[in-house]
Length: 176
Image (cartoon, rainbow, N blue to C red; front, side, top):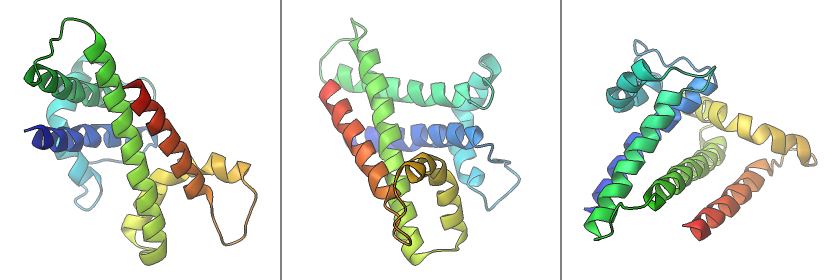
């Protein structure tokens, strides 16, 4: 039950977070385009994002409804798991656990994107999926590339970003 709930919520909340990030990057998620990432993200997230969007507008490029949808999905998962374990929802600590769960999902997704970017740069350079993954990862790598010395063809910025993400995950695990 726990594993199934974790996987289901990770997929749905991850789609909501990806939708939020893509909107931040001003990426066109038009549902009429059958071969874009929107064809996968929108069906997974529309059912929760569209009703929330009617109540909560975006703030500039930040899609508050998508972010809140991810938070609510993780809050529901956290509440269910706490109730199944016999713990109560008396205090607000489960809201804090939800926030940590959301941040952990964000960090895990970023680690996956960076690893996919590195692997695709070796085997799928120039492909459409490599272009999309690079579009998602390059804004995160740009400040690191500016701060690191240039090693020619060897780009160590993904490794530096992975180390930063791992440190942040360790901090979150200690907070949990």
